Image 1 (tube, rainbow, N blue to C red):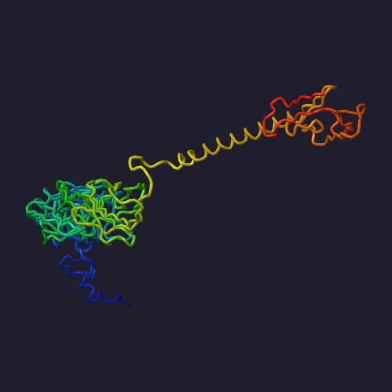
Image 2 (image 1 turned 180 degrees about the vertical axis):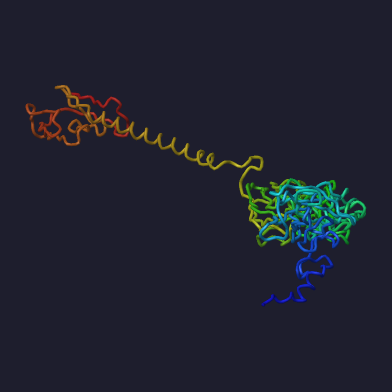
Length: 487
């Protein structure tokens, strides 16, 4: 007869032994999630008193956020946070998730600030104190009391400072060198900086009066003076200052005006002689840029000297008291027909400019000092008009003489009476007709029947009559062009 072997002693020992230390199972190798007295030894069922990070009647695991939230923004009273969403597949814990709790720590204790739903992974923490240290963390939350998971790692930040409550005082500006202004001020007290860091630096803002371009320069917090360089000459500058802490800049101070120093003016340009008379000449000039002339123009000085050998080589000076940017001046009481070299100089508060380029002037031999300069057009007109009148007069006389000559040539010669012959008033000769230079008479031939005085080319043969002829004196005038025949 075969019988079953008796049960081994090892099995009997394992059944008779109870698990200890919060373990369960046949080999007591599995860990309960609750206190030892609340853990069922064979199946590991908990009846309460769950360990940390375990939740529910069966002590299920709580969701865990493993990374610290990221700080995305910071102001003096707010901090913006963002974190990674909890994932059932990738992160520790059991679902369902209902949201996240945001925790804030200021002076030692963690305080829950707000809860956001499970679809939101960011938050803005508000109503914070400026310039204060804060820590932030996040926890995932399941349903029910005690469903908040363990806190995530934390992230720290400091809220920003507010702007300083005052600007620098005692602002003073002085011109010590050309193109420079020295700015001085009083330090801002640290309690007015509104920040534990105090004042970190100062800002100087400056611009020339009327300019739309604003310049700025940063100066350290350990100084109370600064020199602005590279400025324009003799201009007003408006200057303001601010104080800054590590985060904010104060309001600007009230304006303070500073003026850069004068400099010697540039020499005049476009110097010219605009008029000369027998005893004077007039010189004109202009002032070049910059338009501020490096200062206030007080006067101009004109110097001149003779250039002919009779001159002594010394300059004579005359002042023109004007602040205008251009000018004209007449040098009087000079000898006539003398050549001069002339220069102009500008004088302001900083001194005298260089002399201008020289120009030549010459008084004339004839002229009227009381007559102002005559325009060129008037001179030309005064010459042309008389010439035109003379030409017209000559032309009229010539035409008149020609017309008169034509009329004389057109008149026919008059026939003399039968009883007498016309005698030339020029020679007192009855055989010569002065009115026609081509008519001749032969006194030895009697040709009474062929005489034709109207033919300018007819020869007349006449017998010499037996008459006595009385001739007039050829030196006397014969106004009638007649003579007497006496038989």
